[in-house]
Image (cartoon, rainbow, N blue to C red; front, side):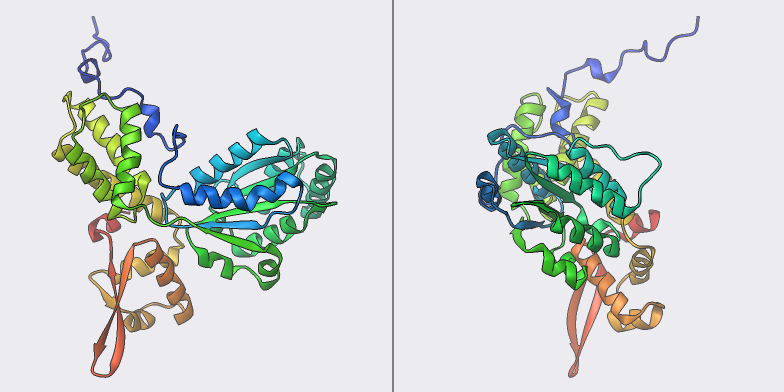
Amino acid sequence: MKKNIFSEKNDLEGKPIFKDESVFYPDYFPLSITCRETQIKELTFLLKPLLVQKKANNVLVYGPPGTGKTLITNFVLKELCEYTKKVNFTYINLIKENTRVAVLSKVVSLFGGILPRRGLAIDEILSRTQELFSKADFSPIIILDEIDKMDKEETSKLLYDLARFNVGKRYFTLILVTNYKSFILELDNRTQSTLFLSDLEFPKYKPQEIKEILKERIEYGLVPGIISEDLIGYVAGFASGRGGDARIAIDLLYKAGKNTEKLGQSEITKDLLLSSARLVDSVKLSEKIRYLHPEEYELLLAIDEGIDVSTLYVKLKFSERTIRRYLENLEKLELIKIETYRVGKAEKRRVTLSVDPELLKKE
């Protein structure tokens, strides 16, 4: 008789590693928020005018990846909506909803409306939105996450339209979430002058802050004694060296736990962390490259062992202005480093990769 492949005893029947794996999932909402008290207080202050039906400034939330921007924004908005029925909000990720029509459809749904499948012209959708807004009994807040991922011309038009909606003394409040503060400079002048933005920065997490975040996940997610204090520090240091990204630390811990479970071991070891770290580096690099313009990726490959910026101007067919813009973005993504050096009286700039060239070529 054929033996079923699931009938064999597997490693999962050994000592458990996880108490609750969902603690390490990207959509997990922690029971307590740590290390972002300043940002919570500031965003709360900026939104308080809505409690007395006054106009709140729109907000630009910016900072490197994995620094709590989306988490804190959603946390504050949920608290606000629990406190008062005078406001309501919707969260829109522009990687998923990356056209004006897609975003406006989500806005319409905030008011309980549905757009017909036959499709409508933008003017009709805007008119429908205004009509629904006029009948609503709350002030709407729109969180636009990854706002820099949509086409810049489309983004300018979208933000200009949303910023101008009003019914009496009620307006849309926009919260724009991005990794780069400079994104706003890429919008047209008309849109920039319409937004009236307040800035809210989320700096990189420090190693001790990442360690504190990890301890909360470990308490609720792992069986006691699975990982030592020293290795928690190693994970925090690993993430700190990669932009202070707490998600990298959480992901590394989860992958190490799964590998420990797969091997039937009783605790996470340094070797398992090292092998998991290489996987995390590869995955995070893939995530960054996925959103690069093809010309940005071509520029990355051209850097190889290192190259002067002046040589890139000659080697690539793009304009110098375009290359400067691409270099700025790649540096923000921590894919490259740009250093200045002198040759005689001349000052030159050299570009080197911040990632393993072999991982890059595998992409």
